[in-house]
Length: 491
Image 1 (cartoon, rainbow, N blue to C red):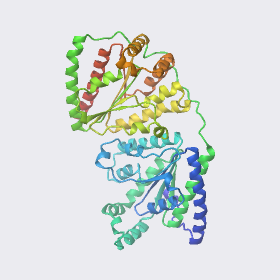
Image 2: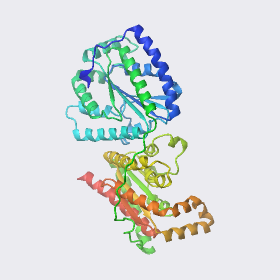
Image 3: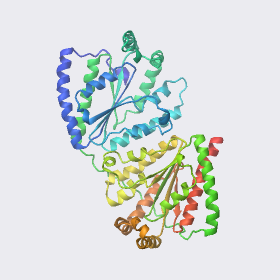
Image 4: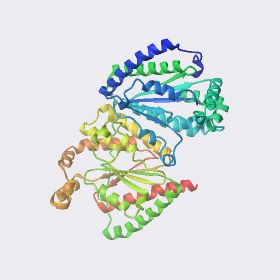
């Protein structure tokens, strides 16, 4: 890509000002159009040190209403960010619908450094790049416009700019030892950039390489590209609904369950405390080993999720875990990709996050109740698998529980709640309405388990007609999964 650029391209002062002024008026109108259409815009600037990313961003921002954008400058990860999944900090920064997020460097920085190193771990870079491409595709599928610029300058031009910056006491600080190291290894970074651009130039997030030896030419290229991309996105309107089909399978996971499974109270009391103590010891070990743990609870209304979570956490150190309950999304959450609110809660390495309901709402309640389109929920299976793969790549232990109860047992619990004053708040008209659509929900659960189960993120179906049995099964599965990961670390 970069070798095809005309590095001698320039723009005269008078012609530049005339075109820039016209583009700024055009971009102001397009920004208002994006806001009215609810199109989130993500603009990424990458490039060589001293290539002029700051100037290019400033030129773009002159045309935009500052109330509608935010600029993010990406630095090496902080200590806290280094304990999170790679994409965590970028998911936290995606814009709401109709807003712009402009990144001065972002998710390509780390793989670029890895590739430019002496002996890059190719497998690790490939996994990171797969995560990035999935991330960009998920944003685009959700309606975002993703624009990516790479500002290219020659080694000779970079040296000239470094010398000019270093000569002025006001700007000398901008040229660091790392900048000079990368300059000495310019050829390596050029090869890394070429490889990254080639491997991540996707239809949903294409690269625009920019010959950046001339600042006016750079500014006009950026303004033209953003204006053209916005016009194309707004003219296209909403994406057409997909017609993806979910293949049916005759075998039923739910109907094959033995719902009579139970455990005697005496055996339960004796084993509960022992297992809780074991889990607490494991909590300390995963903290020392910096292993994150993600635990997802889904299930029927009144299936006992709260009781299982309470027994799971009773003896844990409260500094090492967090329970993240989710219900219907707020207006702020609806204004972003549906995975955004869940990414924000992902645990640090060495900590546990327990999700009381989760991203699976997309393929359960949102699917059944029509809160999202067919295209959105069919696409979600792939997006969820990609997200969980990203978490697994970050070293997470992932447990997913579906708590299953029979219709008869659910009815008994509903009536018990209605008849008990301090439990009455737990039962709502929505619970009764969901119960009347049980067959549709069962079909959604079957698809969910079949299409999103994986060795690194398996589903554990819990026969929960017996609350005592369900609690012990959850504890056993959690202890076993964490124990396996610790054993793998020792191997």
